[in-house]
Length: 355
Image 1 (cartoon, rainbow, N blue to C red):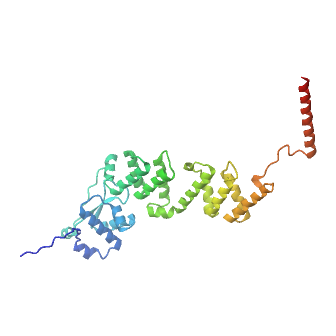
Image 2 (image 1 turned 90 degrees about the horizontal axis):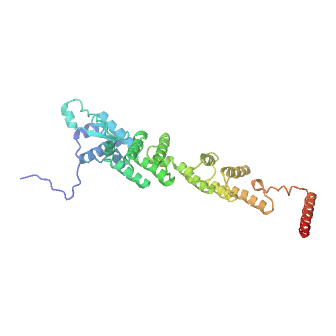
C-alpha cells in the first residue's frame, strides 16, 4: 500500500509559506507590504538573480518607493535583511535576504546573522554587476537605440551615476536621452545635456515616469509652440533663445493667451516682413492687446484693418511708408528743380553738338 501524489500534466510551481508567518505576522501588516513580501519570496524561491525591486513594482503596479518601504518594514519586524548589492545605483537597489522563521523560533531570541560588508567595486566590475539587472540592461539598449551607437564603458558608468546621484528610475533616464537625441537633436556633449535635464527634473521633484508625464505637459506644449515660432522666425530650433522662451512663457502662463491666437498672430506678422524678430512680434501682440480683444477674431480684425489701410493708399504704424527727401520739398520748389535739370540737359546736348 502507498500514498502518492499524481504528477501534474503542467508544472505551475508553488511557493511554501511558513505558518508562523501567517499566524503571527500577516494580520499586523498592511496589504501592500504583504504583497511585496509574497512576490519577493516567490521570486527568491526561483533561484533566479535577475529580479529586482523594479520587477516587483511593475508586477504589483506599485511605486518603487512603496516597495522599498515595505522591505524596510519587514526588516524592522526581523524576517528579512536588506543589504547593499554589488551594483547599488539608487536607494531602492539592494539585496533582500529571507530568514527562516522556524530557525528563529528554535533559536529562541538569538541575534540574526549580519551580512558581511562587500568590498568596493572597480568601475568595470560595478558595470558588469549592474548589467546583470534586466532593467539596467534594457535601459542601456534603449539609450543606444536613440544614440544610434554603442556607449563606451565610461559613458555607461556615468549613466549609472545619474541613477545613483539623482535617484531616478531607469525609464526617466531613457526619456531624458529621447528628448536629447530625438526631439532636440543635440549633436555635442549629449551626456551633459542629459544630465542637465535630469537635474532639472530632480529639482522639480520628478523621479518616475508617471510624475514626469503629469508635470511635463505644460513644458511639452510650450516646446512644440517654441519650435513652431522658431521656424517662423528662421531660428535654429536646437538653440532656442532664452528671450523667446521667456516670451512664450509670458504669453501662455501670465497673459493666458490661447495657443491658436498666438500661432495666428505669429503667422500673420511674419508674412509682413522679410526680417521677422521677437521685437516685431511683441509690437503686434501689444497693439492687439491694446484693442482689448486677444482672440483669433480680435487678431483677424487687427490685421484686416491694416490690410484695408494699405489698400486705401495709406499705412499705419510700422507699415507706414516714410516720404523721401524729394517728396518733402514744397510743390513750387519741385517745379524749379525740374526746370533746372531740363536746362542742364539741353546745355549738355548743345555742347556735344559743337564738339
